[in-house]
Amino acid sequence: MDKKAIPIVICGQVDHGKSTLIGRILVETRSLSNGKLLEIKKASADLGKDMELAFLLDQLEEERRQERTIDTTQVFFKTKKRKYCLIDTPGHVELIKNTMTGATQADIALLIVDVGQGVTEQTRRLIALFELLGIEKVLVAVNKMDLAVFDRSRFESVASEVELFFSKSKLKAPLIIPVSAKSGENVLRRSQVLRWHKGPTLLGALDSLECPTQGKDKPLRFPVQDIYRVKKEVLVLGRVASGRLKRGQDVIVLPSGKKTSVAEIRVYAKQKDLAVAGENIGVVLKNSSDIKRGDVLCQVEKAPVPFKRFQGRVFWLCDEPLSRGARMILRCATQELSCEIESIGDRMDPSALEILEKEAASLKLNEMAKIILKTERAFVVEPFGSVEELGRFVLESDGQVCAAGVVITGLE
Image (tube, rainbow, N blue to C red; front, side):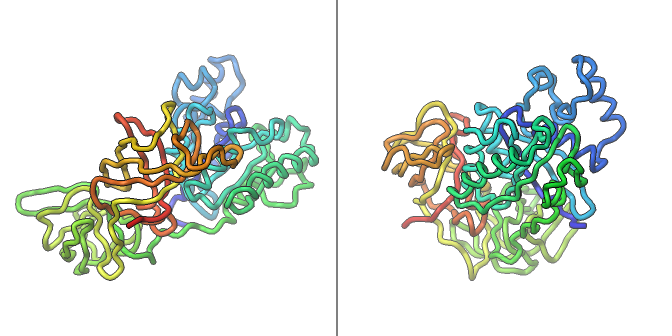
């Protein structure tokens, strides 16, 4: 079994059955304690219902009353092959910021579509988000097959809708699986009432996906998260975003360009000789007098060029439109700096993948566009496909997240 828990974001239109499906997965994989099942039975009885699997995720009393998820929740389960971290996100259109937060943490997306409602505007918007964030591995569960009397033609109609919209995006065609979260049909075990479906079960399909790489073979990138100074020693903390870091290795600190070398690597006060992508570590450098949060330690021979301008693609999340010339706070990995929106390209409706306006003057709520940003100083940014952590960013104003995006390219 793979040791790393693979992060999966589960998304869908409100009431399409995400939380119920997660509850079913936890039950089928025996990932729940008896105490948790008793708690859910009691919560359901207090509301005059039979056991609601959705309550396994909806921990907040407000969520139980409203019967919809209002925040992201992470739960863990495992199959015979792998461990998984399932990130539940809200399906309501007003809560898409939370969905974006969950999606940025995931390697795989599980999209839920109600067989009765089919592909909705919110479904199409979520597919556009997957494309924006570079989530290439997508599974689609066509849920509530029990309410459609397990009708094959209805499933195939919805599957065709899904395939059509995916064909308009840059995403690969997904695996599409008919399920009933309520009864458990085709979630873990093959279903007799869905015997016309010759493909895998939902969890079988999940296990069949190739495990995403951790970026160990890419050039070293180590964004500095914090600095601890104890007496004369300086400990540089962070997570290895890509590549490998060895004791004794020469590194360059960007954006300053100063060179130094690694004296020690520590994990929980223990020393080690090597750290790889995905590890949280502390580093003692031979010269660290000027290092600060937001700097990036890089491989000397494959160091990126810091930029003050770059092109990115963003999804706008605020009621107030984004305009050219707007000043924002840019966050990329551990870097934080002021920036200006230099230009906005074609404004797009992600739910239809249609261009609304060429060379737009502004960008409105739930719209996408390519933009060019100019920062107050040079910083480390790379195309999303190179190093994801340095290729994703958010824009903030007055402490509020207003946009999430990916880097296309740095500009001179």
